[in-house]
Image 1: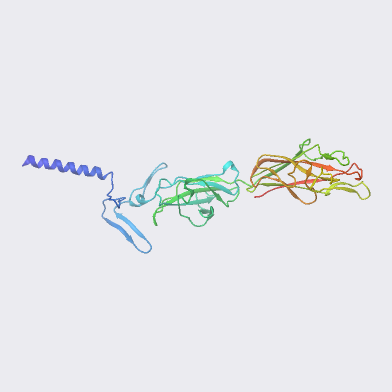
Image 2: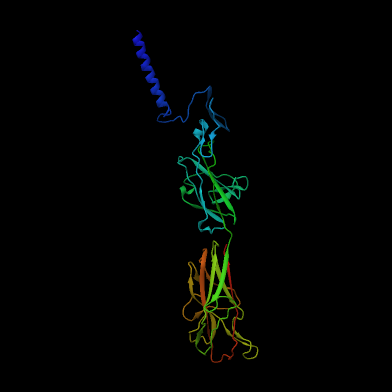
Length: 363
């Protein structure tokens, strides 16, 4: 009898030990459920609910405290088991350091399930999110006052999208939180930041022979019936980070080449949109665009013609060239002046015009 009792004891110990080992690695489950967390306590509740709350808990377990250091955090208990994975810091950038009112951003779903939703929190000039706190709105990619919980797919599935409507010269801090179900919002994740720059615009002008003002463009001696082209070419250069690019304008003072001494009261060789090489045009004056460089610069009508076709230079400010509605760095546009006299044009050595060049950015 004594030997038989010992044998039974050994078998029971083996079975208990086997069960304990398996319990350490798997939770109770079936084809339709899985128990995420379980433990031994003095009691608890499976699911207490009302119209405004839902509670799951086990008494006797730690549900909110955690052990942590600068490099790890241990989160025990049922509450943390049910939380979604905390998203890492989003990627927020200012490409080429050129955006003044927008930034690019993308998020990581941290291997959460497809039913998890995410909110993106933004703070301007506040690294600790103590002030100026907003949330990205998925419908417009702007900032709003309330969290906008959307799926990873709605937030562009990890691809970059552009956050717009921002302030210039401002640092924006971003972090993401995940939520699964009605009451299971996780903690805000790590923080990333990027800074918008200030709007900028520069314009420079030079001629072929003169790198700095004052500029004087000599057309030359006019012979009746012959088109004369200025030896100097005028080159304008713009650089701007304006979202809709830059525009270059030109206008004159005299609506033509004017001589204050020719005949009594002066005489003006008129400016108009003309083909000066045409026999029907006896005299005239204007500007013709010659070249552009630094894409996406382009010449605009009526200055984008060829040959001796010129655009009018009068007192109206007219668009001469632009950067095709895009930011540009070192975009250049050049033009020459052309004139033609007729046999009855009064001779004089002081036919002149003053041309003003203006440029602006479309911010």
